[in-house]
Amino acid sequence: MDYRQYIAKKLNVEGVAAEDIVLPPNSDMGDYALPCFKLAKIFKKSPAIIAEELKNSFKTDNIISKVSAVNGYLNFSLNKTNLSYGVLNEILNLGKNYGSSDEGKGKTVCIDYSSVNIAKPFHIGHLSTTVLGGALYKLYKFLGYNVVGINHLGDYGTQFGKLICAYKHWGNKEEIEKGGIHAINELYVRFNTQADEEMEREAREYFRLIENGDKEANETFEWFKSLTLKYVQGIYEKLGIKFDSYAGERFYTDKMQPVIDELKEKHLLKESEGAQVVDLEPYGMPPCLILRSDGASLYATRDLAAATYRKNHYNFYKNLYVVAYQQNLHFKQVFKVLELMGKEWAKDCVHVAFGMVSLEDGAMSTRKGKVVWLEDVINKCVEKAYEVICDKNPDLDNKGSIAEKVGIGAVIFGALYNNKIKDIVFSYDKVLSFEGETSVYVQYTAARANSVLSKSGLNITVPQNYEPNEQEAEVIKELAVFPEVLKEAADKYEPCYVSRFAVSLAQKFNKFYIECKILTAEGAAKDFRLALTYATLQTIKNALAILGIEVPEKM
Ligand code: ARG
Image (cartoon, rainbow, N blue to C red; front, side, top):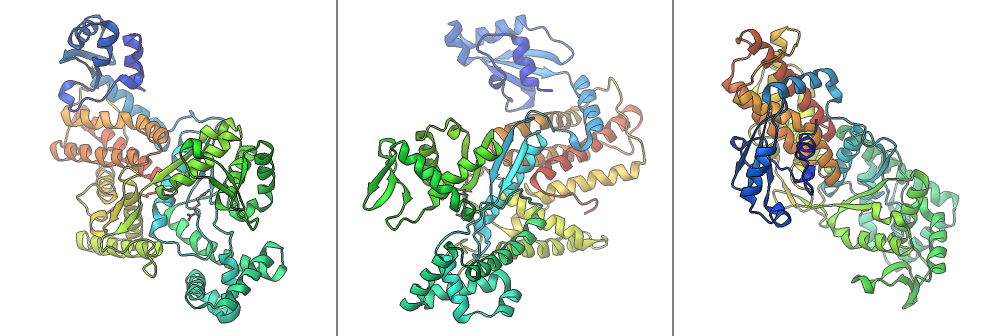
C-alpha cells in the first residue's frame, strides 16, 4: 500500500500530493509527515496554524492511528497492528514477487549498458555500467516493464584494420585462440607502439577491406569479435547479466544514410572545414560531427541511427544509456540533434550517467599499461571472500560456492551502494566487511534469519491483533516501504536506493534479533516473530536479486 498516496487523498487539501508527504527524521515524530511551509503562502497563514487546523480536521482510522502538529509539521502515525498484519500477509502470499508491480505493463524500456569494445580490455571501468545497467534491467522487469538490454558493441572503426594488420605481421592462430582477448589486446598495443608508416598504410587498407565486405578481412574481424564476446559473456554469467541484443556500432553501417539524408532535408547539416556538422552553438554546445571530411561517419552518427532504430523497432517508452559521465556532452548533443530533427521521443532518451571507479592502491581504470581487468577484481574478491569465510566459520560446508556468492555480491554491491554519479574508490577490505554497509552484512543477516527459521520447523502464520513492540515495528515499517523504494529507484535510475534499503532492513532486523527472543518466545509473540523473520529473509532476497546478488543459506 502506498501510504503517502493514502494520506494525501485523505487530507484532500488542494496542492498536496503524495510527493509532499515526507519521512520524518526520527520515528518519535510519527511515520510520515507533511511540512506545511509551502502551504503558508497559499493559505496566508503560518505553517503552525495550518498544521494545527489540518490535525483537527483529520479523522484517524485503522490505517493512520494518530496525528499531531509540531512546529509546522503535521505528523502521522501508522496503526502498527494493522500494518503488521497486512504487510506480513502480503509478503507471505507474494513471496518472491513481493515488491513487484504491473505499472510497466505495455511499456518498453531499452537499456544500453556495458557496451564493450571489441578487442579492448574489459576493465574495472566497465564495472559500473555493467552492474548498474543489469540492476535497472531487473528492476524494470520486476515492475512489469518489457525490457530490452542492449550491448552497443564498440565494433566499428579503424582500430580493427590495425588489429588485422598486427595479426598478419606478428600473430599466430593458436596463440590467439589460447590467449583470447588478452592476446588480441597485446597485438593491438604492439601495433600502437611499434607500427611504422608502412603498417599504418596497410592498416587503413585492411579497414577499407572490412568496410567493403572483403571475405577474409571480415572473417578475421568476426573471429576477434567472437573471442571477445565469449570472454565477456563468461563475466556476464558470473555477474548475472543478460542482453537481448548485441547490435553494436557496425550494425548501423547501412542505417546511417537515411539519418544523414533526413538531416540534410531538414537543413540541419552544415559544412565546417570540410566536415558535415549540426550547429549547436545556439544551445551552448560545440557542433555535433556527423561526417568527417573524408566522408567517414562518427560515433554520434551511429548513435543517431541507433536511437532511431530503437524507436522504430522497439517503440520504447524510455531509452536509457548507462554510460560514464565523461560522455555527458556526447549524449546532450545526440539528444539535441534528435530534438531538432523533430523527434518528439527525444525527451524519452536518458543518459544515466555515473562516476568513475578506481582501486584503493591508486591504479586507475584506464591509464595506459595499467589496466585493471574486471575479471581479476572479481577473482580476487572471491578469493578474499573465501579467506574471510574460513576465518569466520571454518566448519561450513560448500565454502567455495558460498565464497562465489559473497565475493561476486561484494563486487556488485560495492559499485551500487553510492549515488551513481559519485566517483568510487574500490576497497576489497571494505566491500568484504561483515560489519559495514555491505552485501556481506546483508547476506549474513539473511543467513541468520534462515538459521532461525530452519530451527523453528513451524508453519508460518501471522497472528491477528498483535501489537508490535518498537523493534518489531521498525522492521515492519521498513518491509512496508519496499515497493515504494523500488518505484523510486526506477524513477530516478538509482539502484543504490535498493542497496541502501537492504542494509537498512538488515540493520533493523539485527536490532530486533538482538533485543527480542524469537525461538524461545511464546504464543502470538513467537508466531509474529517467526513471520517477521520469514518476511525479512524474503524481502532481502527480493532486494538483492534485483541487484544480481544471491543469498547463501548459511554463512
Ligand atoms: N563503447 C562505448 C565506450 O566504451 C560505450 C557505448 C555506449 N553506448 C552508446 N550507445 N554510445 O565508451
